[in-house]
Length: 345
Ligand code: SF4
Ligand code: SF4
Image (cartoon, rainbow, N blue to C red):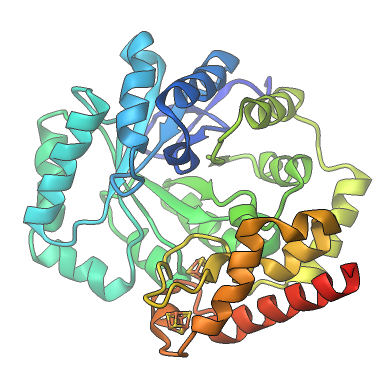
């Protein structure tokens, strides 16, 4: 089979390309830039887009960008975080308005926080709202996303869930494969989110080839620039397995990062005291990879200074879905920056 063919996304039966368009980063772009990047991806062959009610301007921009294609050429996936019927209904209506479409191909409960919330949501009528739209044909398939093992394993037990979206890349291969296997057993489609570890893994050939090597998994990297789209498109079309060099990169990054690294999901932010949490959490990796002259960029200096604002209230740690020791991590990041600046003179 050619690597550019589509595969069946579990029991949803949707035929999708192995790679889709992740809609988080386009909220940082202008409308014109968004349209250019998105059109490049669709014209290159990707046939699905994933966004969410909570991704700022993403849904609205996607709605505008896909207007130039027959609706059936592009599968549109979105998500909402309403955990009560009223909030979820409002979010779904807003998604339809922004996306300017009569139907959504896949609607996902966004970041199911834990098994308890998942059960509550079924009991309090929230799931019924999605069923109602599905029964009217306005939502074609139902899915969910989760960031924790416990939440994911609870979600896949639900008989109406057709697709799960969960973080998966070579750093978290073991825990990810447990969830992939749970999905396979129930014929649930699996979307690998965070294929680049939320930005911590910058080697596109290694990240994409690793995921293409797991045959029933699809992934949705976020794209901000045409060059990024072109690079992933060509890796997808080439369909090469991991090279010896890629394998060495994987081993090295596994040693460097472990599994408890910041995925840059941003759920811990904003800090009420304006600490630049995400930048500081990823600073140790950044100072290893950035040339010394880039360390004087304003945003890096601002992040370094912001550590002084931390009052160790712990609010951020309560919000991190990966239970990371953020207070310790941000201090380590600030210290790594201080040392790197000192070494650079
Ligand atoms: S512990 Fe520090 S970084 Fe975290 S929310 Fe509180 S002040 Fe912000
Ligand atoms: S510290 Fe946790 S919540 Fe914050 S960006 Fe990193 S992984 Fe996400």
